[in-house]
Image 1 (tube, rainbow, N blue to C red):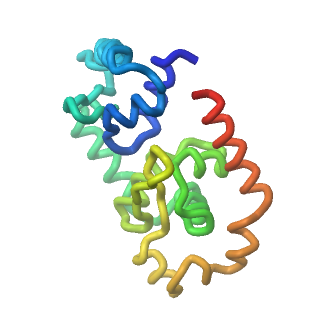
Image 2: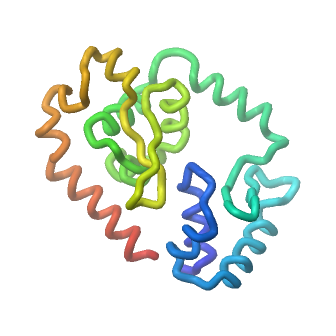
Length: 186
């Protein structure tokens, strides 16, 4: 894969602004190469008809939704946040409760589908919390204290069959396979 493709993928999966230093380290490229890639991405995304924009503060870079779409994005997120949890949200919350802290790619490897909107919704609802991971480039997710209180437990280890499911061989293999493929594609 090209550095352009890798940078675009990293910016897509990251749920936070990334520093240039993080990007340089992850891609193992020179500053000049990163600058050229960012110019190309700005040309690709920062167009009037693009739903995404490259936000570059000079210190950090992030792929964000186009500001002109703010109204429809807010409307969509309000609809998504109303009512009971969907089956997909419950599945994702369960994965986080038993496997957290886990990154979005790890959660998606276990569930087999994209979870970005679900993770945002669960975070906004206060059911999961984001935390900075020292050893991972991306944010990790864990079940919130509020969610634990609602379940009537004090710790995720109090969940039914926690020790069996937390270290389940299938889940461990799927997550390891995802991490290995991520590292080998870098």
